[in-house]
Length: 267
Image (cartoon, rainbow, N blue to C red; front, top):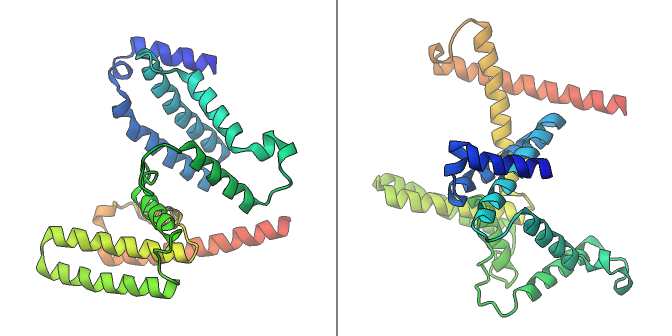
């Protein structure tokens, strides 16, 4: 860790690009690196996971170095703060004598109770903590939050009814060809659909990431098939690409079945 901190300090002094960065200019890289960690974990390649975790750690070190230069805090302060928070929010681990064995649900309730105690005296809305996350996550967290006070559909079926209502309004907006109305109604459709997923216990973020991962695998198959034909994607007609897409779906489905069968046999 000391080696990494020293390297970062040297880069800030001697590298023109690193030297001109600010905390604001780097925030998007932290978000990108977090997504790359998720992608690496999903791929199952442990070497990629190791490398991407290193890239994510670099963002923490980089930000800490810049704030250290301002005299605000340094990396040690960041580490100490998270250590104290983890100890404070896990009394059932660090103060076992005060707690009987807790279930995961009881641990979650205790965690939330401690968080609320930490916020005492601060004026805030219920939704203040729902921020600094991808839009899908923010939407889901807002819905979870207001559901705690009963502002929620009673079941997924009624929530889906709202989706159909919003889709109809979106269709009307498309007919108007007004971009601001289409944007507004499209957002309402997404928000409503995320709500249905939440009611069914589906993470919208994970569901979309799964679909993106699936799409990328299928498209990679198409690229490989086109390359084997000694052609370029731009030379293929939409009909040909659609045929390859269907082949990709079948191929990957068979591949997944084979891997599942092989895994079961090895066990």
